[in-house]
Amino acid sequence: MVILFDRFNLPNDVFEIIFSTSQQKIVAEELIKYMITKKGEIDKQEMSEFATKLHDGQYECILDEAPYKGKRVKLSYNKRQFYDRILTPMKAMGLIDYDLYKKTYKISTKFSIDLVKIGSMWKEELRKRGVHTD
Image 1 (cartoon, helix red, strand yellow):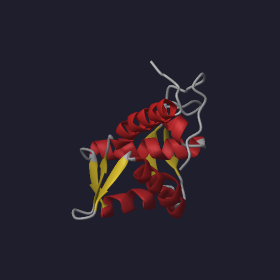
Image 2 (image 1 turned 135 degrees about the vertical axis):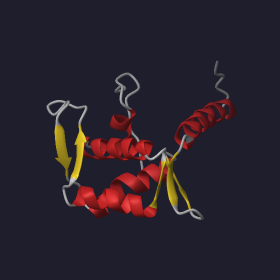
Image 3 (image 1 turned 60 degrees about the horizontal axis):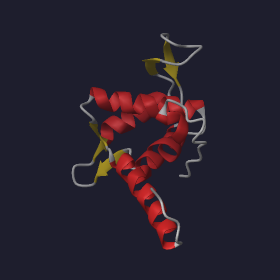
């Protein structure tokens, strides 16, 4: 997944930087909220149930965004697109880990670690090219 951002106009919400549509952002936020209620880790069955509730339009939540802020709504999101556009990119970026042995999904901080690593790689690239950084 490619993240494009304008460093002079960064939104306050990290999900707005990562996901290209507001619907994707909302679904990703709800997934993290759901995982937090389960102590940050869910098994394959719970992930499938979450995706199925979304697919069937039966997932209820209270949104933090206008014009629905504070209102209870039912979200709908295609199950295949959930896996392709939400879960897979979140795993690839290190926001969520999948444990092959336990067959569980867990919230991860690898994303922030990797962003620091990318910043260091950029500084090293500049150093190799003779540009001195602070």
